[in-house]
Image (cartoon, rainbow, N blue to C red):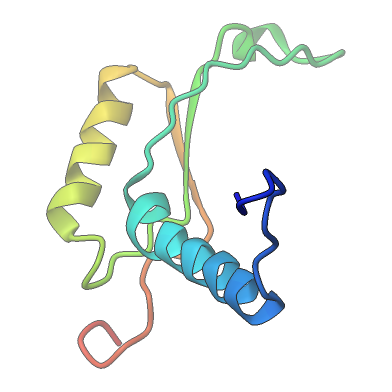
Length: 102
């Protein structure tokens, strides 16, 4: 706040740098370690009785890299195993291309 009680505006380059820096930090340090487990019931008309109650673990975008270790991924898979699904589905990217992983 300025002396007259008015909020001061940040210069556009400063604001841009803060937004880009914050987004980059989130993408690099928070999102790769964010694990989310959702239990979602899906009703499908005409589903054969043999599939009623089937549970599916869907793991996606694991991105094994220097930031996301194989050990961390093993922990994620163990958490999914504890849900005791009938089926695992893996989608998305599994490695991040760099000199160490590909």
